[in-house]
Length: 250
Image (tube, rainbow, N blue to C red; front, side, top):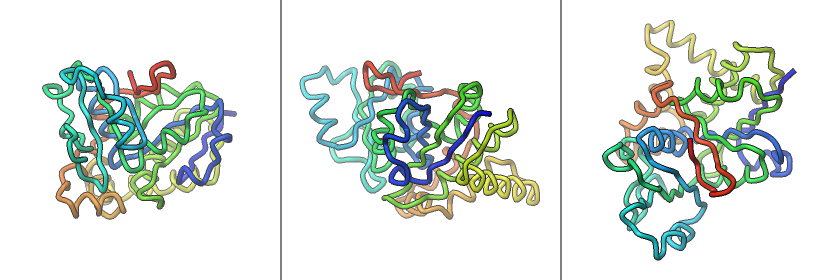
């Protein structure tokens, strides 16, 4: 029987426990969503880096016409960078054919935490079904939530629960305690959507407003990102870390 495990934060699971396993990093607000939008819009690759200085070192001396710097600190675009961490910025006219060097407060750190895994993918609401399709035949899958500033964030847990719900619907998966709990939260969201006559995407966008990540975004004027990030299956791509290049690609 295949096993699905949800980890609420990177610090809740040791790196060696993820070694040689399939790990899906979830940073719903917003790194996972933004990477999906960037690659779906035709970016060649997204190189995730933990620190701002690492980005600047990597691009030093490169032909900048083919390179974009993207990312945030405190939710805001980093000074001197081309793009922030809003998926709305990563449109085809901006990113098509470009390589993106990318650093965020939570998501890129979670990717780094999974560096011993055999496969590292990124998931968000926007590529939910595509990720399940990709991993339906795996035997062991870990869902690694990035959190917000070192704290558990419900936006990530809702996506983890949606994935657990979908995996369970397609096969007989053994769920760890975290997967069972988050699947229950997702079921509550589905029930609320039905009760109020909303689509699942509409209900998710509403509930994102009350998450730590959502509140942070609303405080800095990025309310629209909650609707974009809540749009389920809008970007059916599966970003995966290419070991040879260290970049997220399709």
